[in-house]
Image (cartoon, rainbow, N blue to C red):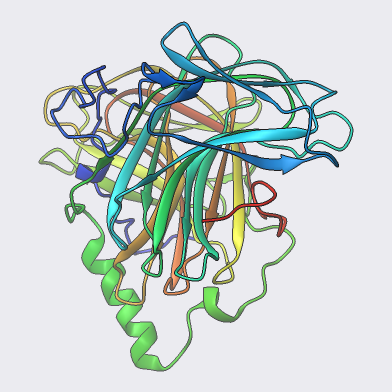
Length: 390
């Protein structure tokens, strides 16, 4: 089935931000909201500017996991099968409710595995709490598989409107070693309107005028939240169940980027310096407001680089929109530098004011983005770690 609406893509929101230098600013000159994100400064065995707490226990309050500085400079968290209490490292940031931010960091792990009664946590991310201390938002990357050198991560997030406090959280609660360095949080500009914004707004307004609630508000989540997530089924060169739209143009409507069916199976998006119009591939699953979901997929990229007037997009993720077509939340994974097939997991919560959510695959610069095994499931009701508090 072909759809007429186009996917709103915010190029400015996804612009590349260089990692923080030891001075505490990004390469673009934007001031980071994080103090001592380089983990260069320590006092009495603890990183300056960061709070170290016990985030989970396996039945006792000792032995505790190890927190120490390592070469980088970087932070290291370590525990094993005998560890009973696991440290989290966090820092509250002066983030405004409703504003957009970008968290960037590098991580590396060694021999991470869940043993016995350990909680399954190895991540870096953002958590937000309301005035009563209730968790109202979280975005984090599971970094358990980052065992081949330092891996760069970027999480773009919107602070929930009802958030009173927001923290960057680093947490390991299973056996192994987690290293983290170069943590930066910068504010992002309001996204620029591009192809499809007007159509999305008109579609949302039409639903409101008709008196019908959007499907995301009333329909229960079915067992399979994405259709044809393995990209096995294709019709006329398009993956069944997915919307194909022009997400961005460089000033003309053609030549267009390629959509390729991979053996395996899978999907690839490809373009070069002569490409003028770039396809996005998306799907709108029926989700329930306030619920937490996990998007999983495998991806790799080849020779991805920005040339000329191209927009800086190479990602898989989720964007949420209100009834007026305004973006109210997003969770994306930049894949520009993922040269080998790698598993990714994105956790997100559908905001209460969201009318729809879109799973998006998008490339708008030279190179190839390949994606396979895409799945979306409702997450377990457990918090990312036990004992989360403001």
